[in-house]
Length: 380
Image (cartoon, rainbow, N blue to C red):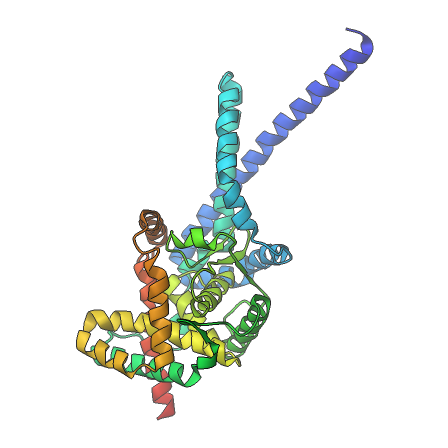
């Protein structure tokens, strides 16, 4: 080997050593960040007031940076990453086989994989998870939640039915369901304006511009029984657009609530309703009332079939057609085994965050009834 070849070999060895040492350093940093996140999560569980402070003052800054970075993309980065997962999984297996020939390389490889998991946990806590320990949203709206009676469920449903009926525009209907009279981009703009209006009145939201993104593989997503998902590692609100527009719009408001740090599902549903109802656009208000009406009617159908029947009889023709149209679309995906698995995973995840699991979505009814009672009391 001549001098030039020896020099190149030495430089390559130095570069490999530098890369190996820095990989270990980065891994250690990620483990320290994960430990810090664990401590933070523990403190937030002890103090809801601290969780409020962190979620709204610090985590919101991280969410804003991530959301702003991905807002410029016309597609969902999270969806692309998920589509690449099979290839990533194969690559991980292949590298594991290659490194298995050396115990040292195997140990470093495992440490690298664990450090990536540690980084994801850190991002989860510092962007989103502290929202599960904040004070409940009823305090922000000054609502009194009590045990809900059948009569209160019916009265709330009748109110929602009446408001939805006033806003229903038959000219917007095509076949079974209404069609959004503006573009997705315009919808995002209108929803952001409505979020601003709610924040001006109640002052507890993180006030920045966000957007929701239609999922390309929405039809495939429907088989998982998922209407939308907020991905904390990209800051994106991803929406299933294979369902009727009135549902997709409400789901967008729900996921955009997550972007603003409202983590609990019932609270994100409630805020989505309040935001839609506060919009200056009639169709958005209509979507808010119809979606909340469905939640309340589901609860009422369990509590009293007779009272449920009386509410159904009161529905205007467009609203009834809208709800029936959704049931028609959902029927195609209802018996999907993938959906059952997906819902089980989601239920487990939500319970691990201290909530009631997927049952928490429907718990928005308690908030809706409390809100209706407060509105009624103010009017009187």
